[in-house]
Image 1 (cartoon, rainbow, N blue to C red):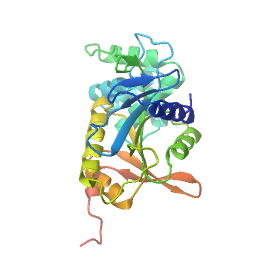
Image 2: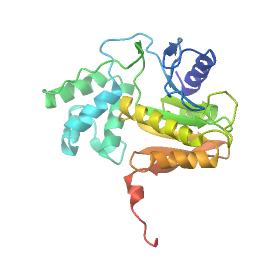
Image 3: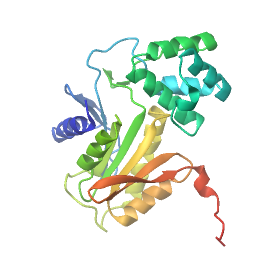
Length: 266
């Protein structure tokens, strides 16, 4: 399934309403409203259901976390060697990036079981059997990419999904928008509460999908987006995209390195 299909199915489910906090599902998407309902900013998690749930279906996020915890860089090279893969050819600049790509590569080539088996040989005391990810009891497809779309001005959702499809990125989504579809925020809204809602939603995402690679696509009032950036800060890593000439461009990586004052600043 591509991202456009997932987003379209998710938005259709959102339009059908439902109890806040409860998950709703069809054959294509699982959605859950994950904000607290105390502001005009609504947040929906949109994920892909498992077509045929398997008890041994790997939770990719959990698997990547365990490899990151259990292996240093040299041991990661050994793990790749056992899989007959060249560590240097695994994409990524950091250890975390390489682990993420290693998991995705083995998933794409149907050798994920071999990765788990090799890891178990090298770290036999660790528990490598991972649990199926679920939302309110509904099994979902585990993915290493999470896309956060702030859609409170022009519609960014469809363009973001199309862009990701052209890049071969399969993701789950968090969609943030006005609680009334098509409405805009005004000076009469409590903007501080909007930002508190954003912070609470992102904390929840980081807890429940720890290790996912985060992508931000944002369309909204400058003051709102600036405040969201202040809440996100430079501690957590993410990629931020800019829309220009009918497509998106990855223009910024947030990380702790942004805290370093560059030469020439006073």
